Image (cartoon, rainbow, N blue to C red; front, side, top):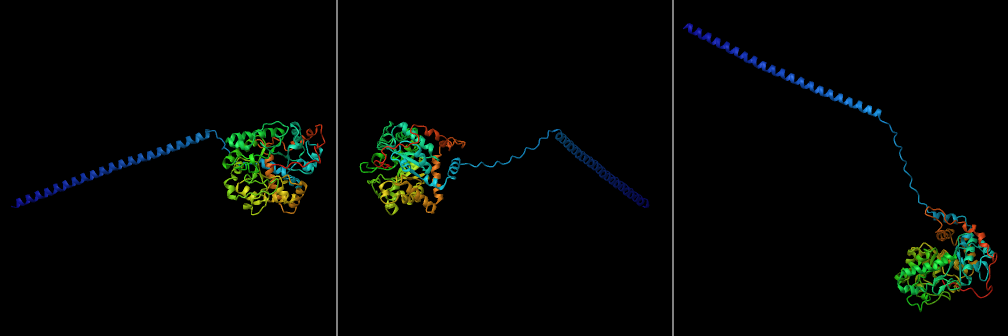
Length: 487
């Protein structure tokens, strides 16, 4: 029994020993595995770290090499200096060369010459000769005393082509300033040049041209008239007539108008202005505000226009606006009274409402405003020469045509300016409008003078070589009165 228990005891002790050994072996195996895993992980980590460090080192090396290459390229490159910064060019100011010429011409003028430059008169008015047919010492002395802005000639001043051309050329050369040499040459019944001994084409009455409906015919008529006027030496034609006439038999204008349809008349007027001015002669629309509906003649006395401003806007103003839009250089204002516009019987030529408010303000005209001939009865029966001239200029006119007594009118205006009744600024502005027309062809595209301002004075000697040198030929001196202008 004791042996059996001892044997069982030994067997259990042997079992426990074997189990302990087995557990130890298992533990050793586990530890070995763990150790091997740690070793393997460490090896892999070290390899990865070494690879990362190698890659980083390689990247830095490549970066260094690139920097060296870039530096070498920069050293070998041709260094060009930086382009200088372009200074921003100042914009060129547009120069109005014509305006500059005008300013330079007017600025040195004495007041006496400025005032005289506002008058257009007959040569007889400043020379005292009965009928002037040539220009000599008398003309020279007269122009030296009165530097008038223009001279107007009539049939009695014309003998033949050579005489007329010579007289005009000499007169232009004698003037200290550019001068208008003007004439009434409408065609038809009003032909100062073509109606005498000089053979030129007769374009016929404007009424017939208007009836034909062809504006090119109006253009050609204007160009035909201007071509022979220009050849003779004229530079201003008191044409075309812009009045609307519905009944030529009762109107004071008659067949001098293009007709009674305001729009059609406007087209004819515009074309005629183009024909005249394209040929080198200034045109002058007449007779603002429109006298086609009047039956009285302002040559003989007061004439009244009964229309209202709205009536005129619907009819008479249309041809004038067409001529203004065509660039006409001058507009002549009539002596007709328009009480429904002015409120009284003041002639339109003396009315600020007509000239300043309607013609300049409403129709937008900024060219030369000329009065109708101031020696007409519509003026002389009611106003003195000086009074009428001053009133016309105050109303907005730029030039006074043919006062009844030039010296009286001139002295009256001169006194009005000195007393401040008419401002010197107004005189200056009128002269600027006048001289912009007189100098219009004196510049080329570059602003250079092509027709020297002093050229007329340089040719003065040539103007005195004719056989009648030093004489103003008087034809019929002391005889009948010179016919009034049919403006």
